[in-house]
Length: 270
Image (cartoon, rainbow, N blue to C red; front, side):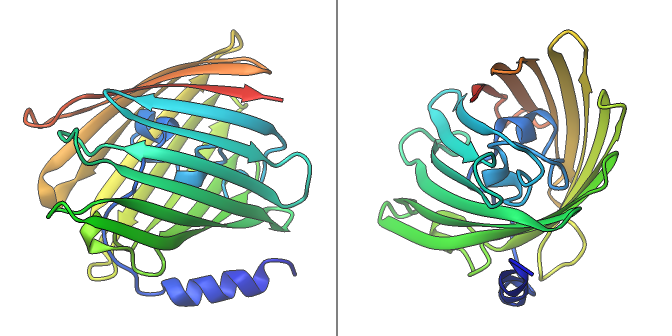
């Protein structure tokens, strides 16, 4: 079947991976505390799980701005072919830093291998300044699987399957997650993120979303990193219409030394 050889090869490369960093956290993930690894998504799938757009049928353009300077733009097409594609660019400043951003471009392909199972792969190029102020560049890829049985979904993703780059604070990591829904109105999502050195997850996430019949969606979540004694709350709201949506998300730490992060975005569907 299509993608079977790709899935086997990538899983082999990714077996035994390590470490903890996403190059850009998309808006919906921010609002729901990084809990959407096992959830169907639109453009945010570029960063959360490359397979997560496979159960949609859209052509969409998305823009996200994270204060004060970070942003991302992307195009997703799952409408014109059985194999969906997404292309995105991001510019990401680490919290507390304003002079040395990561920049990156991603290209993803995804599709169903069975009626309820999809796989996806996202190639990436990331560049920026390392801790010593030298130019650094990385080529790598993410791989994801998503199963969709209607009211329940589950997913698995490997990030930086070729190893990442320490100088850019990018390492291997893997995550698993799931989402359950009731009458397409109320959703609960769970996810964990782990390293190869320690199979015990270093991060646990839980999120929820309520979609009202009046084009408003409310969402929130909580994530914790017990070994680092860190935890974060997320919240957000969206105005959702058939053609254009507007989003807002906020994530604030329980540690006073870290800053609250605000994100706004819009999605246009054709």
